[in-house]
Image (cartoon, rainbow, N blue to C red):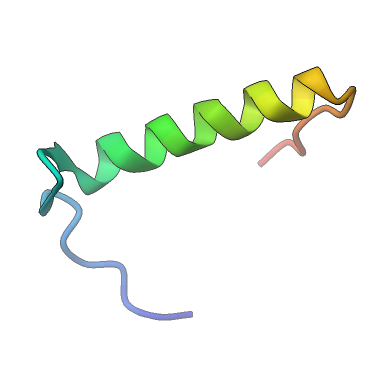
Amino acid sequence: MGRRGGEDTKLLGSSVNEARAFAMKALERRLKVIGLSPAAA
């Protein structure tokens, strides 16, 4: 896998970690709506 740097880099006013958390929450909601459960990490 590639390097994972810049965790605190700002992206559209949010940190990369905040953007990832938001995206993961949105994905979990979509999976719930269609009747799938997210895989345990």
